[in-house]
Image (tube, rainbow, N blue to C red; front, side, top):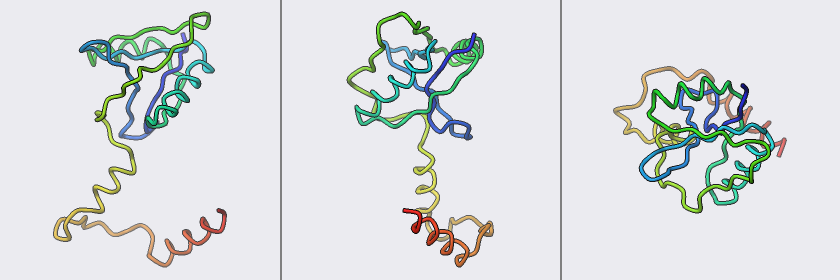
Length: 136
């Protein structure tokens, strides 16, 4: 069965799934309806939480993940009452925003900087930056 879940940093190495805490347990919500999942994501944003991506996935994959991570899961059915996010969100997530990782890499002391060569030269980056700014 195809369900919809909320992911952060979707399709990256730093992907995280949205859970709600019930006591000491984490629970993944699986939505039957993409619209319900999208509404839930918008309500999270309205609470100043990070913006998740709604992704379709097989329910068995979610259940297997939950069993491996020792999480609970709940199926939010189409005809059920609208799911509402908790009023209080956790302060620290198990994953980082992609932009936070970039900042962490940029703030390394000079003697710890990466030895890799940049893929683009500074002039190429400046050119791309000017083009993007022109679009705004």
